[in-house]
Length: 397
Image (tube, rainbow, N blue to C red; front, side):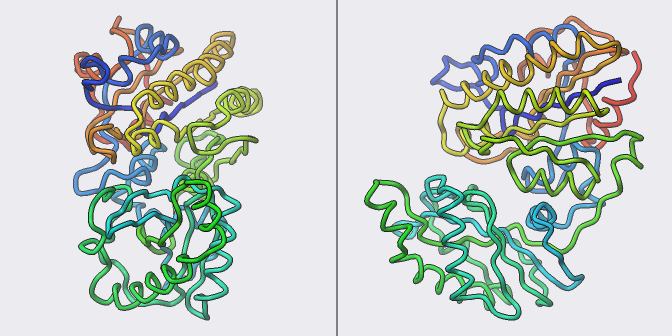
């Protein structure tokens, strides 16, 4: 049996006036996802357990078959695993966004989707100025970086993700208490360094958002996951452009496949991901393809860009995969978002997401095209998102 799972990050949405009352999924031309829904099983799954913030970290962990209530320690530790940053049992790791703050408000959680080379230059300079025996910064992709505090105190105070506070005053979201005593001086010193940084001078000349501040959040301690092979009896591979998903894959013992031109943004190499997924299935049991683009469009409230991103996923990833799978003797495919990222909210929601799966041993129920409303109508619902993977791999009938 060959298994393919395609995760359209943040694709689920709400009816939009800009789309004449349709959702993005309803507006998008997605004939291959529609085929899966109409010839297989369409329904909903809750990927965010009660009490958890609706982040991709929690949702993707659930989709891969791991219960966040047992395994979750924070977002940043998963990204540290992707970079193979060794963490001691007392160490804390924080996600370090490069952001744009103006007039006291969070203007842009990604500093204008700053490039990786620019971000790395800034992180190198932050290390030169701010790191010591306890604190060090680690470069990531684009605006997404990390900071590790070695042998630090308890930093379990909740910190706001920057994409949740766009257009809000940052003062009321700054770290407080013991956490604030350590982090606030770092934030202030970083802002001073960035105020006249070479990268920002160039970005200002180009009319691009500048990386005015760092924002620390998503902190946690060293995580551990059971092997995916031990849990499900299969070897697998993951294709993604974000460290969060890479980290989950590495912790689970899944192979990480890099695709040239995969950017974790709207300009990502969709076709390359689709072809890499087919190649992975030729030698392996399962492939998971994660695409960040719809989520980024949701955060930026870009309606047409979100529609186009979903159409690219359908045409260049789901379509070729489905065509290849249907020529195999035994196969299954599952398509879903990890969570909604509604245009109206510009951040994540904890609402259930639509799922569609088809293939050998999965009885169809003649549902409508792939959409949030049609998924609700079927009445098929998986309450515990961490049970979805086992259902996908082992359900009969």
